Length: 134
Length: 495
Image (cartoon, rainbow over all chains, first blue to last red; front, side, top):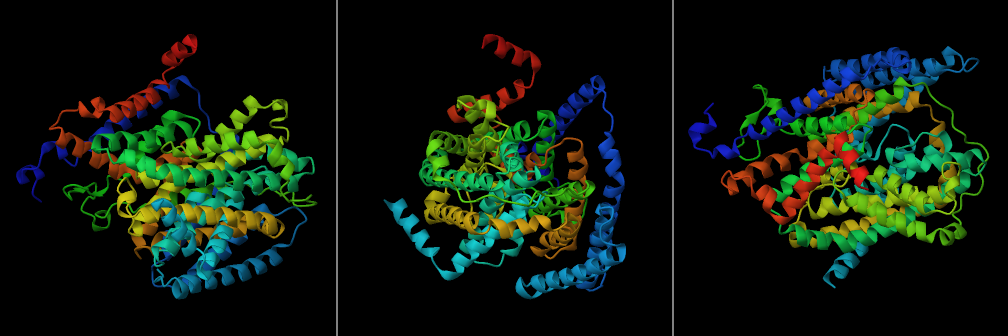
């Protein structure tokens, strides 16, 4: 590709000017943050550590669905219903009260909700908003 | 006179059956979005932008403004009942709202919320109609120098005020500005940071990035925490009380004015409108000891302030092309998608559009009054639905929201990547709002700096010597200096 220099553009309008300024500011503020962090002792809170398994599960489900399965030729409603079933079931079981509904009942209702939501969302976007689904 | 004609014409245009249906449906959607902790007004507008892309521009903006107003109003319900603000704007109202609920006055708190929201919004609508043309007239004198500082000011103020740590806020703003630099540059169409990847030539699309920052990141934040139970039993009367309005009329007026002013400040937003109004009400109240313990005045101030900030935030978006808050930034982006270019020329080329937004905001205010009076109890049902069910469904909507505008799977990846990055940063105390402002304003900052330098032939003096540019540059400098402990000590010693 031709360098803009050879196209005789005004050097003051160079496309790299703003990225350069932003890069300098990132280095400056990042450096200040680094200096400050050396003065302050920081440790991961117990709450953050406790939520790590939930975060990992959410990331696995969401990235697996949107990054891995969508757009690979499978019907959208089927992939979405599968994702919804797995996510709803997993987090309802995690949030379940002791003495609450049994796992079988939660699984059955989660499957019904997932199927209904998957079909409804696919229909809404494809037939009402005329979006070509991934 | 011409303005009144435009306003009347816009109001007549909203009287059609479809428009009434859109307004009611969108406001209800907004209230539900606001009710659900984790779903913000910004996400609501971003998602609805993708759904309204094929609608007529006037109808699409009607839907988006109604979602905006509804979401800010709806969030206080969750604050009152769960002690978790539905949106950041409702945090101040939660202080007294939840205390009132604990004292058995949850219904009264919701009535105050409705009263404050409607009155604040009406005050803001009046200011929107009055100040937008005035500000646009002043802004006609702006050149690249002023726009550079104004856009930079928006990002920096958002960074200073929306999080706990200005340094982290500024870094997020700069990250947003840097994200906006990806793709063909706006002057020479030269590719930047594309690494030969065609998908990146068009830049990081705004809506997928916003859906990632405010949707996917929020979903991860919500799912990371175990669920809490709502106090949904035994509500007292939810009807707003005239006595509360008459008793606190000064607070309402003051909070409305503060809300609009804070809303107009570039990048600050509704949450600061609520906090500033709450702080002022506490300072001037004879019953300040009740604040935080179930004060009707405190709750009224916060709810008036955050809703007045909505029209306030729309004023600079329309008149200057610089949004007053993160939701207003997405609204402005939606306007651009629908072929409306906000900025000083808007009042010259499409004055009817600006008055149309005034009429739409008024319609949205009337809708929240209707829903505040008749739909409080049915809407609370939404809070009974477990988050484990709602959040995965919202994620599917986020995926489609990111994908729908351009039908590109790449946009889904953008949404995922931005979501994960913003989630990790938010867990470490970096706010998301400056990032959004940065993405929206990145193009203006970039082009204004380079155009300004070309106009002045490389001389930076006009960036500081022109009167308005000089004032804006001084404010930017003061924002930085204020964070230096020695400067703060000097100011406080002199005070």
